[in-house]
Length: 287
Image 1: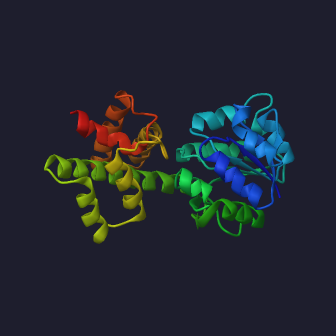
Image 2: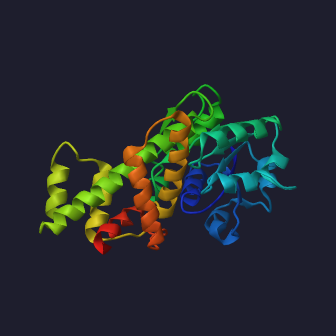
Image 3: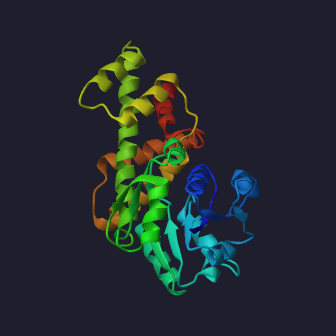
């Protein structure tokens, strides 16, 4: 299958490599060509503009940090929209507001193409292992090619039924992620301030009903104070702002979520934005 990838950064690059391993022909564009070099060496074709990616592909995956970046890619003389055709699926993997998904669907449909929001759950290790969970804003019967594409990058696809529901699901899950991370950071800080070793706290937590893969992953990083980024704190802060807007639109109060937003805002002001989101613990270390 001819697949385009726009955005070959921390998530897009490993996702693209998995598509290459699955035997698909890739057409790629990124603001910085050097970040796609390993794909080009593996046989991917470099495209000078997003429109060229769209013209040459059957599916274009967008792996961009923000919906503002996606909007920039869409527009312009050689933006993606200039290359949309009737056989094209545009698959947006970003964590975006539902309003953008609906806007993007209409824009792609104006060129007779099809759009689906398909944000992913997981960070760099899961992207490399093709074990992401994909929240697809459509049904499994929409397209066999789409199913093949999504199953090449993830271990499970959750079919939410219609456009924008994937975006809404991802925001709800990222709220849970933010709350879990801040709860872990705060409770670990209490334990260590009380004289307990981090490993003792984590051993007890991992032995009971609260154990989870995420606890093991982030607990180990917190214990080592290893903040090498898997999912940056600045992106979590960005997502919390989107979550706040979504909650406001639905009339849902964000009691704990509002606190998490304030904590991540403070952590970003402490110049922790490029660190892993687990670095929110540094708030407690420095206070």
